[in-house]
Length: 336
Image (cartoon, rainbow, N blue to C red; front, side, top):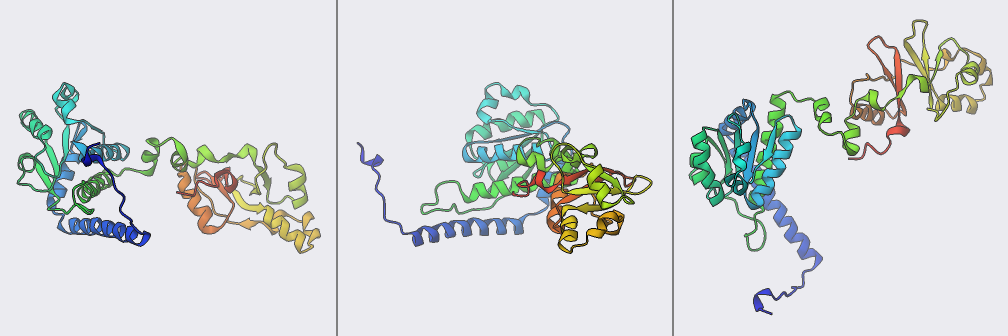
């Protein structure tokens, strides 16, 4: 076997490994801080081009920069801006046919001299499509021909030899994220819109609307606040899995209180048996926390956690109960 392919393992203690890893993280972190300080109005110009784009944002790049571009295209798409990644080689071999006249290009290239990208430039310029470049220098071929170049500056790649794209790709990723997220704020992109693009997995469920997850009113014990505790539990049972709360309503059908298993246990512990034949209104929780049906589940999770409650009534605009969010139904979704 050729000596060039021979491998030797140099002893590397845990302390040395951690020291090297911390050096790499520190170098990349410092580069991001410096990048944030040097950010200027060219970033704002790029945002204007993206915000005014009537077509799609076409993201392109080669190698590691291309992989960053793919991630940014996905982030743009999920935060309210239509975008897709187009590899420059594929573009030069027929895929330019998917590009529209109202599209905007977003290039990722540290050197700004990558051959596949520079070959694209005259074609795009001829079609008069705007080009945004994220590159080290605005004096490079890409930087000079772009409508706006967000300059990364001279970056030192991390690692012992400083060869593998690391600091530069971290910087590209951060700038791309900043563009996508500030743009989503400019477009007033809502959590509900974000949820529509993320229907799957635990994230999708966290972003679902409360009305899609709550236990509906026909599965919950609902009683009049004037009923006795004994009547409530004898006459207002519901089939299936029981929630740990009874919804109490007034004569107009509006939510007036909540009586939970904990309230019942407290009466038993205090030997207040006589209270069972008194109106439940005397011991119910008045003015309980509530949430609207169109709120996202994430808001309900935050309320349940912050207020240390297990049941959250869902009410309409008139204050009438529609259902309940029970913590046993959503346990585990609070973990990110």
